[in-house]
Image 1 (cartoon, rainbow, N blue to C red):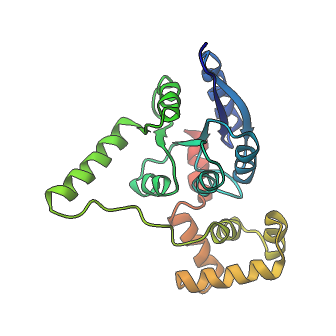
Image 2 (cartoon, rainbow, N blue to C red):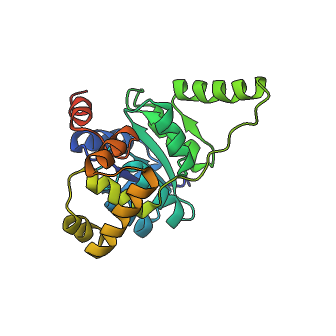
Length: 230
């Protein structure tokens, strides 16, 4: 009997999520067991449901998909994460892999790619969109040809909690609102804000928001509007 692969979908665009669900519904061995429209909810459901695979968008409110990936990989033992995003930048791919993602697919790819990727990742292999895979191979071969050691992906600069606070700051949340969202005290939020400014050598809120946008922690309103139209 064919084993069913259980899947959690994390996507904040409802139309996109419904399209993915319909695509996967034609696959007898794939079953969607949960849906999340926000990063914290994705982590919560992944821990609760322990799905085989999470299909994760990057642009998620309150907690972005990359940070949600890190937390899911830290808090589950066998769940694999595939990033499904419109972002094609090497910086996003590198961070996704550093945070534990097993695959990175572009939304521009054919729909037939996703079911195959889910099966491959479930079998403990990695899966990437063709152009991303070519770039990864190119970077590795370039490092080897130059006699450089193949770079290892280092630990992220910010902790999970610092990243959560930074995203909420960038989204315009007050200390009180951030504290309520994260279930911590206002004083703890203030401490994290102060530590962020020290770590990043940024001394005002606008600078923190700009850093979050430039590093893919949160999207600017222009980026989000463009993606929703694409």
